[in-house]
Length: 83
Image 1 (cartoon, rainbow, N blue to C red):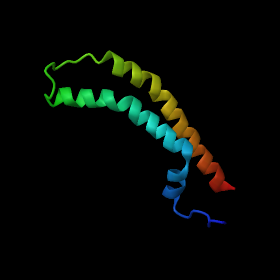
Image 2: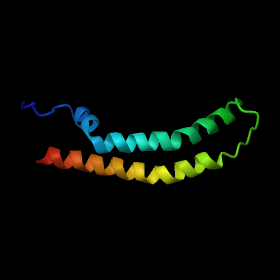
Image 3: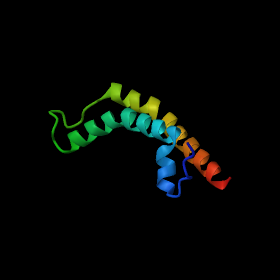
């Protein structure tokens, strides 16, 4: 089965596994910390200044790998487009 080449650039980026994995790592790693920060700012937590150490460590360990995978995925799609 030959599939026609993708003409829509956003489809090419969505089909890249590196971009999907990078975005998932970024969201799942930093999401809980950002959710706690937003909840504290909105007054949804008892403590107005929570100290989510575990979620901070998780975000710190997953942020840069997620960004790197996103960049590598974008560069790979860009290289394929140029060929």
